Structure formats: structure tokens, C-alpha cells
Amino acid sequence: MYATFLIGQITGIATISAMLLFGLAKLFSRHRSSGHVQDGDGYAVLITGCDSGFGHQLARCLDHKGFVVFAGCLSPEGAGAQLLARQSSSNLKILKLDVTSDEEVQQAKKMVQENLPEKGLWAVVNNAGITDWAEIEWSSIGDFHNMVDINLFGSIRTSFAFLPLIRAAKGRMVYMSSIFAFFHCLNMGAYSVSKRGLEAFADCLRVEMASFGVKVSIIQPGNFGQATSIVKMKTSLDIWEKLDDERKQIFNRQYIDLANEYFTTTCRSGSKNGDVVIDAMLHSITSAQPKYRYLLASATDTFFFRLFPFLPTVVTDAVFSFSSMYAKRREMLYAE
Ligand SMILES: NC(=O)c1ccc[n+]([C@@H]2O[C@H](COP(=O)([O-])OP(=O)(O)OC[C@H]3O[C@@H](n4cnc5c(N)ncnc54)[C@H](OP(=O)(O)O)[C@@H]3O)[C@@H](O)[C@H]2O)c1
Image 1 (cartoon, rainbow, N blue to C red):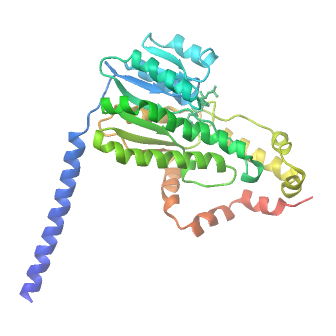
Image 2: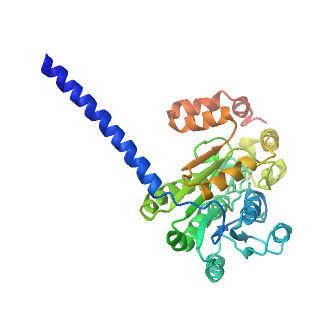
Image 3: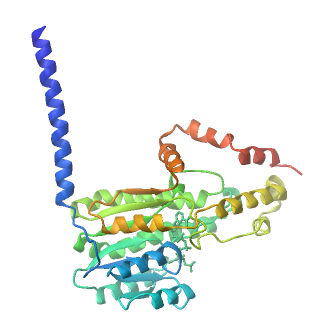
């Protein structure tokens, strides 16, 4: 009896000690490898997609903090890039950078290497992206290609080019994902595919880069459709005209009108202020302990989006069958 009690005590103490040691080791290893850069003195950052939106805003913030900013722009002669150049110091350099072009990424790399400040390239922010909404059956393979070419392969291509410089500085790789990476719903098929793929890439990269002291963060904004230029409005006629006769019969015009109105309203309900996203991007670049993921939504939505990927599929699919939009859709399909 006494022996059993003693074994129990020893096992308990050993387990708690092991847990404490593991915790301390984790803490120690994090502190040891937690190089960080509060201001940009001597460091550079490359950001893609700076013509507008989050990339544009982040470029200005980092410039004010003293970083040498390489601001990748799709159209360096466009209004967004020109405004950025006017509002920033001479330390900010506008680069022509279409992330779908091998040639432009290599040109950008050359330009960065030739203009690197003494401490090197500290961070790459893979921000360039597009979105669209359409049911999978309204889309073409070209629509999927376009989305994935920019949102996923664009980031992979940029990462390949700049990783050696980031490794040399033991710096940061940041990826702009979305809540739609792990929240699957009507109309977001192509976008979700691109962002889930992006998160898989970033997760694998984080594991591989840890040994080099490079940290990888993923930013997952919710609906900030009013804060940036991401939402390109389209009419139900734009969708209708892409459908062949068979699909016109299945989906019918009334449903397409309803879906278009629903999505336009949803986009308009997005936050007008993207400061919380910029703060997260800044944290991922400058903090000693950047987070692996930054989920940026209201408290209720954050709770929901964190929980969603862990729920059984039968439950997550049921969520949609409770939605009024989904019910209307079921009624309206095949309607005259
Ligand atoms: N706003 C949101 O609600 C939200 C939510 C979740 C995730 N995000 C993500 O946040 C990132 C930034 O988007 P944003 O909201 O700031 O939208 P945005 O204002 O449209 O910014 C995206 C930028 O990427 C550029 N771009 C498009 N195609 C490109 C290409 N092939 N190569 C290089 N640049 C390209 C765009 O240039 P043009 O302006 O010339 O097209 C634009 O400047 C995206 O990855 C997006 O998916 C946004």
C-alpha cells in the first residue's frame, strides 16, 4: 500500500518536473533566438502589393520608423505608387514588381541586393493579393489559375528569391492570408484554395526556417473590405454573361441577383479602418516574439473562426444549412 503511494508520488513529481523543465527550455530557447528590430536603423524590408491597401499603409509606417523600404508595386507609374513616393522619405524605393513574373521578381532581387543597407534585408511581407467571389460552377479554370498565380505562387516565387537574404539576417517572413483559409463557405472557393495553400506553404517554411533563426508569421484578416481596394465591384450581369445555357437554367437570374446583392452588402459591411491589421504586420516584423498567426476580427468572430477548423465536418456544414441565404439558394435553384 505504502509502496504504491510512494510510486504514485514519485511519478507525479517526475511528470511535473519534466513539464516545468520543458516549459523552461522552450522559454529559454525562445529568448535566445529572439533577435528583434524595434526601429529600422540599418535594416531593409520588402513589401509586395504597395499600390494600395495594407501594403501601401505598411510601407509608409515602416518608412517613418526608419527602415529602408523596398515597396513592390504593380504599376510604379500609377497613382498609388506615386502618392507613396511623395509621402515617404528617400529611403523608400518603389520597385516594379508583378509577383506572377519570374523576370520582375529577379529584377527586384537585383535592385534590393544593390541597395541593401548595412544590416541587410530583415523582412519580406508577402502582401500582394486579389480576391473575387463566385460559386465554383460559375468559375473557369482560368479564374482559379489567376487567383492562385497571384495569391499563392506569387508569394512562393517571391520567397524563393529573397529567402537567402532573410536567412543571412535571421529575419522575418510574413504572409497575408485570410479568415477564408480555414473557413469554407459559398462563393469563396478560388480565394480559399489560394489562401489555404499559402498557409500550408508558410507553416512548412516556419518549421524549416526555425533552425536558421528565421521567424514566419501568418496574418489572417477578417472583413476589411472598406479599408482597402481589395473589393472590385461587379454586377449580376457580369456573372450571368459568363454562364452557358445549362448553368443559366440551374442557377437562374433571380438567384444570381440575390447572391450579388448579398455579397455586395457583405463587402460593404467590412471594417473601414485597417489599423489593427497594420499593427499586427508591424508586430510580426519588429517584435522579439512575433506570433505564428494573427487572426484579426471582432471578439465573437475570432472565437468562431478559431473554433471552426476543429469542429467535425458534419457540424461545420450544418452551420450553412441554418443560414437564410443557403435556404433561399436551395429554394431558388432550378426556379423558372
Ligand atoms: N481587405 C481585406 O478585407 C482582406 C482580408 C483578408 C486578407 N486580405 C489580404 O490582404 C492582402 C492585401 O490586400 P488589400 O486588402 O490591401 O487589397 P488591395 O488594396 O487591393 O491591395 C492589394 C495590392 O496587391 C496588388 N497586386 C495585385 N496583383 C498583383 C500582382 N500580380 N503582383 C503584385 N501586386 C499585385 C494590387 O495592385 P492593384 O491595386 O494595381 O490591383 C494592390 O496594390 C491581400 O493578400 C489580401 O488577400 C485582405
